[in-house]
Image (cartoon, rainbow, N blue to C red; front, top):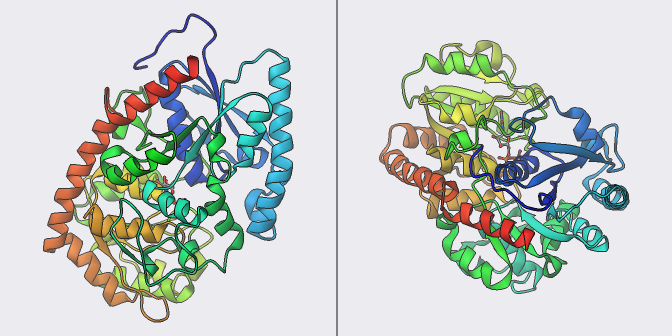
Length: 460
Ligand code: UDP
């Protein structure tokens, strides 16, 4: 393994505590792998339910240990709670106690825990760490642009409900609808809105604030946030094999909760010409309504491009009747899940229709794949704005008055990327970002330096 440092006293040891869903596990685990490659002992704290649901665990020769606490939903996890609000409330109550008990036990056995790096969706973890004399590192899983907007709302610097446009440092003026959905439409998910605004509640007590992004991508916003917070950006947190290749065997995020139909995808892609395939996926949680599903399916078909579409098992029943059966197998493939990184890295893929979750966003940027941005909710809407207007790697779909993206618009966006002028520009920019992403994590890159700096502070 690269870079391993040797410590004269006990190795520093950090707890990594992600919010228990795939998209939040991935970045913190990757950060953990970077830390362990530099000699830091890391323990992933997850819930009993997630730890039972892990289908495969390969965190580079298992360099990360796993310990489980209770979130109060040991049998069914998040999906078994009757509402997000119930889950979040009970997780805080039961999780705080369970995390505290684990720390107490380990400390009484002589285990050193030098920092708890917690997902800012669970600010209570910082209070628990501090209670046991351990320093805390806040980990922001969303972009700094989005977090800066949440920070402004939290501090009352922008008023909700919003005016017609929104200005925050480091970003161009945003139309109201370009802000994260929790900002311009607070109502429907009060539990989640509180979580994202409250990320900054106790952040002044954190010794470090980490963010999964890289300096060049969000330079101005990062500079501004650094004035406010002890910010260290450490991303992009893709497995090393897709970036600097310094970590042996680090090809995968390492903890998979869903089984991928990988050989089917790869065999199918291997037969397709370079840049000819549209890869469409909406992440692990987003749900398309039946009407949107129908329009999207028709748009993909009418685009006449080759397509690989991930339709999760919980979404399949919304497909138009007969669509799956009628798809010409040479032209289109539907799978329930794939290894997205391998798909995006395949030379046959020329366009990524994405819901713009921040992992998918960073994956597109880091692998140099132009996008059709089709955001659904939360930070995805602002990520889509950045993808099109700031990073210039793609186009955004347009919704009609019913909030639906129609098939014609899907066809024209795909054609623009696969065949049009915008696609060429997007490809040039995507290739530029790909190089910059690699540079950030490579030896002496901005993120690599920040990780080294953190380790020095941890052992001092
Ligand atoms: N992903 C995957 N296979 C799929 C779809 C998604 O491996 O078929 C991965 C993707 O690479 C990303 C994560 O799942 O790392 C989704 O995270 P993101 O932040 O994009 O979206 P979320 O699921 O949190 O909405």
